[in-house]
Image (cartoon, rainbow, N blue to C red; front, side):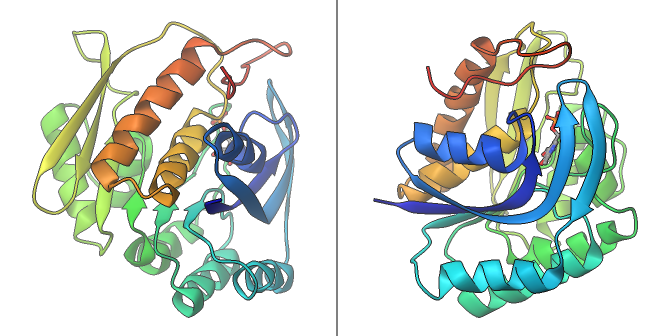
Length: 260
Ligand code: PLP
């Protein structure tokens, strides 16, 4: 059985964060494990509070996993604070897992800051160089590469800037870009070529946890020994179906469907 680890925050309502990651790993036939960085109180309507887990316990969680179990892929999500990021970076340097998918979570769809403002620089300097793949959406890519993104060419430019920060692959997700074709386009850059992944924009309000689900699906397929292009292609198919089957569970933005 292949094994994947998510290092991320807990989402009480189960649509994003650790809970989405573990559901995705299970749905794709990979054994899931978790290191919890923060506990959020949230539902389909918003985030109401965050408790950051101490670095001491984060370090112990990482050690507990890696000293005992072989990890085939790691997905990193909400990291919230400078010290959390530094602790995770130390863990990655010590244990050198082969696949590290970094989802640079910054703000929830409901507008809550999930990454401390001062922590952005640390994320860029300490975690990006250790990642096999980073998966920013357009607002995140704009912050990291420090350029405005309005076109597909801007996405390519941003991917190149982020690649030069030391990560092996960059996937800029274009869902926020208004294209004429009513399609979303994601761009994968490996330092040499661009690969383009197109999917129809699905008309649903239930999109809570889409970024978490995509990045953990890519981590799952990397754990299953797919190469990067194939892992992204298969993960895109999974998230597209997960959004197509998304459903409402409360008064606000519902989750994607992991098992279909
Ligand atoms: N909560 C946690 C713990 C997360 O990791 C994330 C995103 O990565 C979110 C909430 C935000 O989810 P969304 O913006 O899809 O609603």
